[in-house]
Each structure stands twice: as C-alpha cells, then as structure tokens.
Length: 244
Length: 311
Image (cartoon, rainbow over all chains, first blue to last red):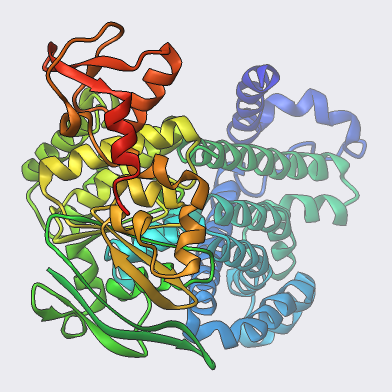
C-alpha cells in the first residue's frame, strides 16, 4: 500500500488542477489540438461541469441504492422469497438495456436535459447493488442470526441492528461498482443535453479536437479512480472492525 | 420452576420430540443429553419458542409461555449457543448489554452490569469492554456469549452445546466457571450436550433423550448406577461407570481420622482425583486438607468401598 500513499495525493492534486486551473495544461494539451484551434474547453467552467456530473451520479446512485436495497430486503424475508426471481429479472433487464437506448427512449417522455440520464444511470446501477445486497443478506453468520432471535430481538430490530450492518460491507462493494459505472456512463448523457463532463468529450469528438477529449476523459477517469479508492478504503475499514 | 408438560414437536410424520414432560427446579442445572437427532435441541428451542410446539406447553413459574409474545418471552430467558453467536460489529460491552438495552435499562445500569459480569468471568472490564469479538480468543468469546445470556438476570438460562466449539482444556475450565457462577448467582440453567461426561459433571439432574423420548430423568449418580435402558447404559459406558461415580463424590465425604504421608488433597477434590493420586504415588492413603490444614486422610480402601457401594 506504500505506492498508494504517494500516488493518492498526486492524483488528487492533478484532478484539482484539471478542474480548477485548466489553463495550466495548455502546453500539455496543445500538441493534440487542431492547428490554431482552442486547446482548453471554454464554453463552461470545469468546476460547474464536474459538480453537475457528480450531482447526477450521486442522485442516480442514491436512488438505485435505496430501491435495490429495499428490494433485496423484501426478497430475503420469508414472505418475499417468491419475488426473488422476478426482481432478479427486472434488475437484469436494467443492466442489459444499453444506457444509450434508455436515453433515446426516455427523451420523448422526459425531454432533453438531466432527466433521461438519471433514468438510464438509475436502471443501469440497480443490478450490482441488488445482487450484492441479496448475497450479503442471505449469507449472514448463522450463529449470530440464531442468537439475535434467541435473545429476543424483534424482526425489525434484527434487520436494523444486525442484518443491515453486517450486510453493509458487501452491499457497499455493489454500490461502488454501480457508482464507478455511472461516473463513466454519465458522459453520454451530454448527447441529450445533460450538463456533464461528457460535454467536453463530445465537443472534442465533433470538432476533431483531441485536446478536449483528453481533458474531459482525464477528469472523469480521475474522479472514477479516486472515488473507487475511497470506497475500497471504507469497505476495508468496516470489514476490519468486524474481524473479516 | 419450569414445567414441561407433554410437549410434542412433529415434522411431517416424525415426532422429533414425543410427549416429553419434566420439571426443573429453580436454581439447578439440568443437562439434556442425547445423540444427534434425539430431539434434545428441539426440546430446548421449544422452551423459548424458537420452535413452536405441535402440542403440549411449557410453564415458567406457573405462567404458560404461549401467553407471551415470543420475542418478549426470549428477553426473559437467557440463550447461549455453540460458536457464541456474538454480534461481530458490536463491542464486548454492547454485546453483553444487548438484552438490558432491549429492556430499556438506563445507561448507567447497563454499564455497571457489563462490568460486573466481565469481572465475574475473570475478564478485566477496562481491558475488554471496548474490544470487538474478533479480537478475543475462543474461550473469551464463549464467556462473553454466556455473560450476554446472563445480563438481564433471566429466570432461566438455555444453553445449546455452549462448549462444543472449545478445545478440551478450555472446555473443562469453562465448565468449572459455569458451575461456579451458577452456584454464586443461583441461576436456573438448562443445557444441551451430546457429551455424557459433561452431563454428569455439570448436571444436578440429567435428562437422557433418545428418538424424541425422554428415557431417563434423574440425578447423575442414579443415571450411572441405575441406567433405565440399554441406551442410557451405553451412553454412560459400562467400563467407566465406577470412575464416573467416583468423580461425583468429594473427598470430604470419606475423610477418616488418621495420618498419611504424601501430597495432601483438598477435601473438595473428587474421589476420582484421589484414586488417581493414590495410584500415581503408590500410597494406600493420602492426607486430606480443609482450608489448607490437614484434617485426616483418605484411604484407597474407602475409595474402593464407595466405587462399588451402589449395588
């Protein structure tokens, strides 16, 4: 983990510079820009695009987490077990539907803007969270569950005090996968006018400006790597507290 | 007093527990012993309604358990199981305080109770209170599991193979601790085991289960000397019967005046230990002590007399 200690601050500094001081990178990106063309995307600030991008991802992932975890809780109760195959089919469909297709289908209903992107990211994010939460809730330590019942915890108390906390690390792995997928996928939201960092990439592709593509891509990539890393650290901390 | 009245549990067409009746006195240890599939665990789990009886009922101090909501009933009955079942995400203190917390004790009362129990189980409260179960040894985890079961001063403590996951040396120590604590607190304990040795050394009364039926319910000495069926005799083991009997009698019972050479035995030692000491040292008699002073002697002859005295 030594390399992480050095790499992490370096990457954070690089990301901050790219978002807050894009002009510093003119010399680096210049060779990729078309001759005489602009090197740095100027139509919107990187900061506002980043915040909007992260906001859309956070909103979609939060909604996906709530729905997927509630669904997982439902199908792991004795009364809800019958719904497990159905829920699995639904979340699987969400994953098989390409986000681009969801965007295309959602635009007529929701119009241009952030709406269709939120729907696409939400649907795409359900499966990993749902699958992990179900796995976690069905593989709880048997003796602990038996004791929880035996000492007199009610159903709700067992769920809130024992099952969910114990299922948290594995569920978090699903949330992490979902968030990282969403961070990347959100870029295509800009094709339907959602304000995301995809705007920079798409502008670059349309004007044959590789500098733009690099600028947008690097920022999205760094966000994904750093958020992934932070969530891994959180999971390791939670697992460590429970003794693995 | 716990009264189990004609309790039956049927799975499909099989009677896992078949019309079992028994009465457990307050302040005693009752050990339910049997092979796997004998229905002993099902019997125990019907007492706190982790399994609902098909017919029959259980009364605790005269009140039928079926009149109380199961999770409320269970808060009044301690429950300790094999592999302890501690909450891995809670500290030792929160684990032990789990039931008092459910019963809405005040924070101060819970903290005081946790420290009291840790001390009782020879674990320094300051050192162990804030640890997580994964940071404890197997023996310590097991003790915390029993402490949790005792925390709310329950009417009854149910234990399902509580020492099953411990290695033999720690197991013996844990059994002695349990005996000691039970005497001190006057708890009523029902314990399930497959180990007849454990049943005889721990139980005030032993209930032997076979094929869902209660085949004998008696004090250990009677189980050994007058087994009701071949099955019971088999579980006791014919060869070891005299030794098992001796292990139930303390040196105090056969001390006689006189002197002897050799290493002194405390009067609380069992005759089995005394016999072993005589054989090992080659002496016919050994001095016996009470509170450190020699009060007489134990002779091999007296031990032999007791080993055969039951017929």
